[in-house]
Length: 184
Image (cartoon, rainbow, N blue to C red; front, side, top):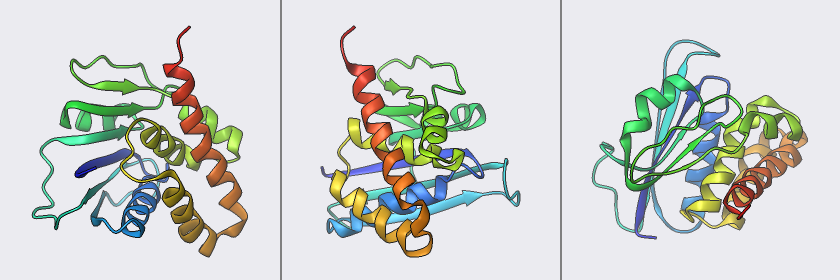
């Protein structure tokens, strides 16, 4: 891995900034350079929200992302806004529970049922962690153990009661994407 730009986007309340923080923490733990930039409106829940995480082996020269290696779009407005940012050969993760699966030439699109899997793990807000699991199943931007450790650090420090659900959601996203890729 030489570097990657990831955009995590959707509605406020879907845990987008949390997922970006977990990804950034995992990258830092692996000794990578990291830049994390949140973007959200004044709404508490339901408004548009996003964050950009840039990781690399070299110092990051600019926070501007014209083309992302990975876009997680967990709402139709997020897909409309950021779907065109995916670089050729990149990955687009959408919530297969809530959205139609787009077809974008030259882009790998995966659509695990993020909302359904988050509910099964115990909380709708885990939708972004399910998507993060899908991301690392397809692109090893960081190692899975580093991601689990970051979840333990970030979630376990403030809310140890939800750590098990977070870890379950992460695994569910990874398994769902592996199942989507399996031959029928």
